[in-house]
Length: 147
Ligand code: SF4
Image (cartoon, rainbow, N blue to C red; front, side):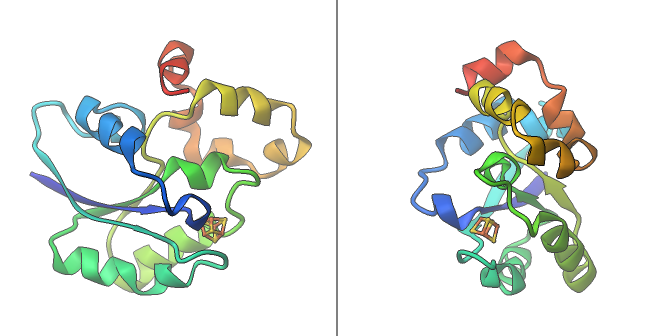
C-alpha cells in the first residue's frame, strides 16, 4: 500500500482534481511508478497557498501524520504559465525538512500544454526536462487524451 499526498499550484486552487485522480487510478503520468497491482491511497490534497507557496512549509506535516509515504507536486507546477519558479525549492525543502520523497508531477501533461510550451524560450531555459523528463517523454496519444 502506497499512501500519497498531492500539492497543487495555488493558481488552480479551485481545481476539482479530476485529472490527478484519473491518472492515479490509471497509473499514468507520474503515478506510473506505482505498479497497477499495488494499492494506493490518497491521504492528502491541498494547494501551495498561492505565491510564494507558504503552505508548502506546513501542509506536508499533516499529510505525513495521515500516513503519506510520498508527496507529489502536481503537473500544474510544471506546465502552468509560467511554470512554478520555486518547484525545485519545494522539492528540496520538503525532502530535507520532512525526510519524505517528493515526486514531480501527477497526471500526464496535456498535449496542448506541451505544444504551447515548445514555442516558449523560457521553457528550454527552465530545464524542466531534467526535472520531469518522464512526463515529457510520455506517449503523445496519452497526453492528448488528457487535454
Ligand atoms: S507558481 Fe508556484 S508558488 Fe505560485 S501559486 Fe503556483 S505552485 Fe504556488
